[in-house]
Length: 396
Image (cartoon, rainbow, N blue to C red; front, top):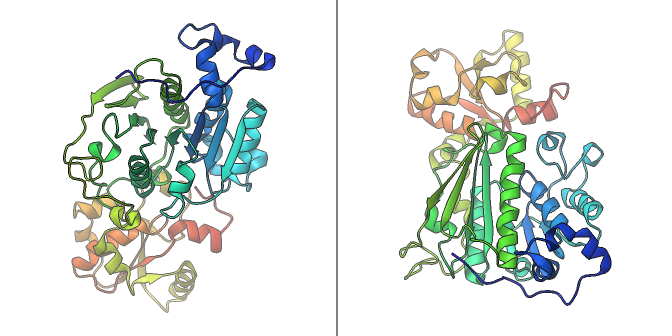
């Protein structure tokens, strides 16, 4: 679908800007008018992480005049494998501040506006209203639905992308001209069904491929060139080096942009998406121990004063990175299929853990339903163990 340019052109380009953007200016479809539109554009990027890193750098390099960044996190060493806007010296620093420094090194003409907050119902409208276009680099479903609903209610277009392991997805959502995110995904996946990148991993360079594609769509929208991916879901498979495109139609029954919308204001997105199932949350009540309690239990077990089985429900590759001493690996999938239940000891208390406590809570619900009423799980998982008990081990 061909659309008019999203922004009006700036009054002029300076001599320095003409030199900087000369390779754009000699492209007939971009030219002086297109570059002036980029200069006049205000683009908000949500997240300065895997997708936000290449998106921010390329938007700045392209000459977007104002870049907003929504980011509240700090740089962690595990980010550096894919979040190329940050470097080793930035570890521990605000991601927003680190990103701003890299952007200004790339293009000192860019006006960088920082929003060092967690995007939520209370601030999303105020922030979005300041920008022409939103680029969504978030990695959780609650924020994705918040971004979509706020954009629909404000009439704003946005470029969406997602990544996991070797695959990425990208589309443009603009309810006034086509489908929104809810037309594609009316409901979030069941809690625990889709692992996060922190649990499942992501090929670092995949971020560059998808993030750069998001910027391509942003430039097309801002300047009015080409055919934006409105009504198309583009799927990238890195291992096959293959892009394929699927049509996405506007859903007349969409909850927010359909003919009779039922969502007319922002909702409780954490409850809508849910981090864990209700069964897991119920099972964890009164059956959650801390890593400090576990450490004491291990000492009692070593002295013959307590007996239990510590079961790690992560994947084998995670188990190779770090582990709690004495733990036995039985991945979560074996509990979902029921294969693991037959081999569980009946005469010992079961203690489950995972990376952070989400997967172990899901397993806890399964085993309690199978009759292991005294089973418990470890809140915070191995991340808390490394942080509070054994910092000599690596975290991830």
